[in-house]
Length: 190
Length: 189
Image (cartoon, rainbow over all chains, first blue to last red; front, top):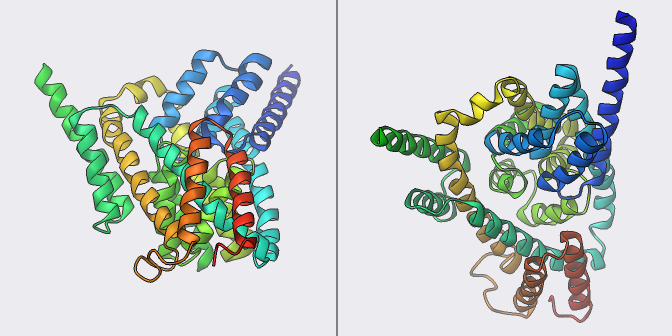
C-alpha cells in the first residue's frame, strides 16, 4: 500500500515537472503571458488547483519579489506535491530559458560583428524602447490614482533619473513610505 | 570571486524587484552597469533577444550575464541567485497565504511599491532613450546626422504597433527590418 502511494506521488511529480517544462518552453515574454497556459495545463487538464487558486497566484506573485513565472511555479508545485513539487516545478519552468539562452549567447557573439546584424540591432533598440514605453503605460494605468501614488511615482522617478540615486534604497524607501502612510490612515479611520 | 559576485548580485535583483517583467529592468540596468558586465546598448539588445525567446526576462538576463562573465558555472550561479528569493518566500507564505496577502504590513508596503515601480521604469525609459538616440553621449552628436531621426521614426512606428497590441516579437522583427533597410541606405552614418 505505501508502495502504491509512493508510486502515485512519483508519477504526479514527474507530470508536474514535465508540465512546467512545457510552460517554460512555450511562453514568450514570461510573466503574465504564462498564466493562461498555467490555467489550461494545471486547472483544466489536471485539476490540481482551481481557478480561484490561479487568482491567488496572481495576487501573491504581485506582492512577493521575483519573476511571476517562478512565483507561480513554486506555488502550484507546493500545493500539488509539497516542497519536492515546488522544486520540480521551478526547475521545470526555468530550464528551457536557461538552455536556450546558454545556446544563444555563444551564437550571438559570432554574429554580433556582422554589419547587417549591427544595423538590425540599431533598429531593434528603438523598437525595444517602444515596448518598454508600453510597459510603463500599462503599469501606470494599473496603479491607484491618489496623492500618495503620484508623489511616490514622481519622487522615485526624479531621484533615480536626475539625482543619481541608487535603485535599491529607493525601492525600500518607497515601501516604507507606503507602509507608514497606510498604517497612519488606518488608525485615523478608527 | 566572480561566481559569488554573480550569485549575490542576482540574489539582490531577485529579492527586491516586485511586479515581474520590465519592473526588474531598473535594478538590472544599475547592477550590470556598476559591475561593467554589459554596456547599455548590449543590455537593450538583449531585451529584444529575451522577448523573442521563451521564459521570463529575469531568468534570461541572469543566464546571459552569467554566461558572458563566468561561462556555464556563471550562468548557473546567476540564475540560481535570481530564482532563490522567490522560491523561498513562496514556500514560506504558501501555507498562510491569505493571512500574508491580507496583512496590513504587506498591503502597506505594496501601496508604496506599485507607484515606485512606475517611477523607476520611467527612469529606465529615459536612460534607454538616451542609449537609442544619443549613443555617444548627449552633447557629442546632438542633432547632427540622420541616425537620430531614423531612430525616432522607427520608435514612433513601433510605438503605434505596440499600442495597437501587435505581438512584441513582430514589433522586434519590424524594427530589425527597418534598421537593416536604413543601414544599407546609408542613413545610420
